[in-house]
Image 1 (cartoon, rainbow, N blue to C red):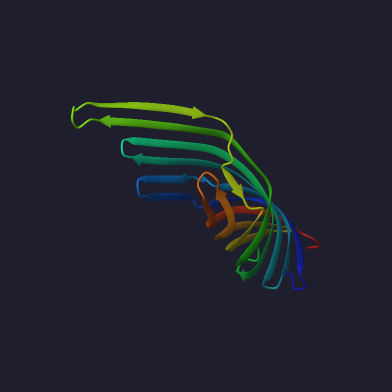
Image 2: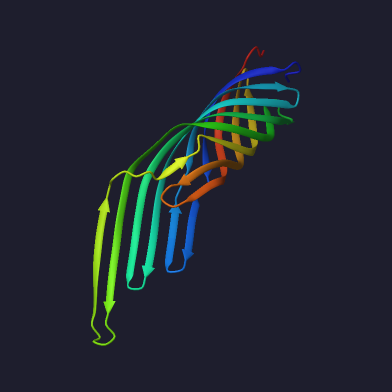
Amino acid sequence: MYSTGQISVTIGASNKFQSDNIYKYSYVYKNTERSIREQNVFDSYIIGIEYQRKKLNLMIDLTLSTNNLRVSSLTTNQIVNDRIVKYKNYSIGYGFLGVRLSPRYILKTKEEKFDLLIGPLFQIQWKLYERESEHWDSLYHRHSYYDNWSGYSSSSVEISSSTQEFDGMSIAPQSVIMGFSINPKIYIKKLHINFNLSVGMGITTRRDNLYPKENNIYGFAELGIKFGYQIGAK
């Protein structure tokens, strides 16, 4: 099929699941636990072209990816008789526009209407927007006092909260994705259906401004579907 080469236009969507990040720290007179729960499902919308000849398929896609991330943090300080617990929570939504390239090898099957494509993928993406919301900041302070001479003890608790905005996170304007994909492909006359199964890693910089920690590398798995139309196919 496609002895002289064939071009197709494609459109589709996918979900990309990223790894969670859990930060924990402890040091003298202070115990701090930081947690970022990514519940990370990127919704991606894809439009692109494919060039296919003999056993080579070259895919170039334009992608639009959006994500809503829920960030929660807990800081616990225990110093002598004082225990201070700080909570900070917020949501952040952000989106990226990307270009994806994937040269894939075509594994022919006995069925003429079905092929299996395998190969690496590379993607660079640029941040379109970054919006924070639902800020919540609270403090729990417990002070205990005990007099060894009199045996007298007492304690007091202070609780306060605020919904004022703060700058919780900064996301790099560009990031890079690398991985490997397996794509079952079904032909229906001039149409074809691609199923995308990909795994890999992303390289980026995302700084947690509430506590100086950068996330530079993450793992991901992606599931998606694309529909294509073969230009000039018989």
